[in-house]
Length: 245
Ligand SMILES: *Cc1c(COP(=O)(O)O)cnc(C)c1O
Image (cartoon, rainbow, N blue to C red; front, side, top):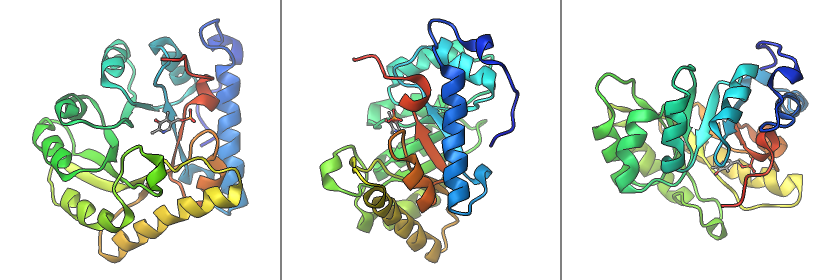
């Protein structure tokens, strides 16, 4: 986690990307210290930079520091950025809500989807994944509280959707993802994340080889790491506030 090229802050800090190097270092320190506090190796938690709302130049600057994985939520915004950054060997994660008419571009341009919550979408992604590409990595999104209203299947439906994904040849079931509603305390945050861990245990018991828990954002990454996150998805703490849409 804490390896990677050391580039001094002033190499990348320009007016478009204030504090990016500091933010990146601090975020990785937050992850490392949360991991060590729960007795985990810090490289068991990976940092996914959520770059929605920020320009390709900011992504390029973060990539120059050594950041390799980026997440985008809106295809219309993401596709030109992916195009512009083609010369970099980045791994792209789709972290937005997925409509049927958007699946082809996701299947063609992304390496991961974190937000799968419908069988129909899984079938389309499987069909549209190019033959030359490796299977698309998939996390099933779980809705841990109905108030969240950001997609996801309820916990009792996770297992059946996961089984269906696991059976599709151009998809690779990797694990589970959640966007829990905001909670004020560490303990409340962690107990929500532990519900995702319980869902993962059900899949493991059913013989599905899932190794991924995508959970934790800028405000709750410590609780997510304590509960067992393998990807934390961080936007604001890296890039600063997103411009209002
Ligand atoms: C925007 C977003 C994030 C990042 O949230 P921050 O609070 O800015 O860190 C993480 N995951 C998903 C799915 C998002 O849409």
